[in-house]
Length: 432
Image (tube, rainbow, N blue to C red; front, side, top):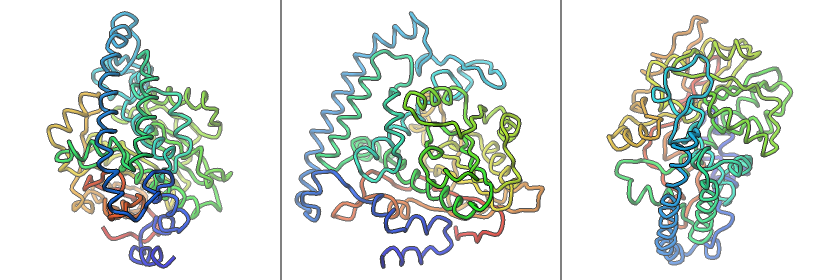
């Protein structure tokens, strides 16, 4: 329609603009399909009334979870001190390449308990899909039904997770508010710049657009799709463009999370036979070397690398080295990833991420992206990295989040950082 055409014309060099502003896709992603809000969608009074209702419903969810955590204490003690099961409270090492010195030294994703952050990411995508608030990930609910929010090894935590997720969905149906984002904005907004549901919604949609735009450009011949630090990513199982016989699919991740995911895929009856799984630790191994030596990966082909929610946890040199590998792949290759604003690295966030075994290490000022890209460009092939997309929170909210009657968006998203798509070849770079 006219609105989408105007917005797409305003961002003519964006790699993903055509996909993002497609009217059918945009309608699905930015609509609330099931909520009391839909009874009187244009009523400010009704909208505000449901906002007040969300206070007692949110308090009920918080009270239930606090009580549930207390009830889990005996299970945690039993699991850790009697049975010695691996869990987020008992980080036992998984078998990896190469072996690590101790669980304390490694990112949690490399342990047998896997990544707690990856599970939270899966949960947010699952909720946005089930509650019909624009979430495109239809596989996430099937995987989430196999996993506890606490990960493996804590008896009883699975059912506490189910109850919490159910209550959060009903809170949205009744009030149109996302509990965890509302809680973050109200009580932690001065040091945390995003709610997990809003961030995951825009990130999922944008990277879907990256993959589909890349597949559309390269479907005439063989091409690679590589999910770096895959976690519980589901693109290889749900995007139609990747059912093309020319698509060669790879997931690379730490062995702990990858093992749990493969078991969940099997239990959920999700066919993963066309995906090559490669285990690797990004901090200790050369991931490209692992990909080439442990699979049939051909880097001479056009390749899109999806690097979702990983850069935060790596040293700056590792991030730059990872990105520089892209310029050594076939013409038209690109890498899409998200980064945190350096201003987000406050003591509270750093302490919180360290406490769950996944400390934040990398961030940058969005205004310094050009300098960062130049530092990554170590190609020996003659190709130079170009910025194909650099999207910030305002445009992301407009593209991918549903709006309330007052103009605000569901969820909570402030200036968290940005999304970058860097590529090589003849693509037209976008303005930064």
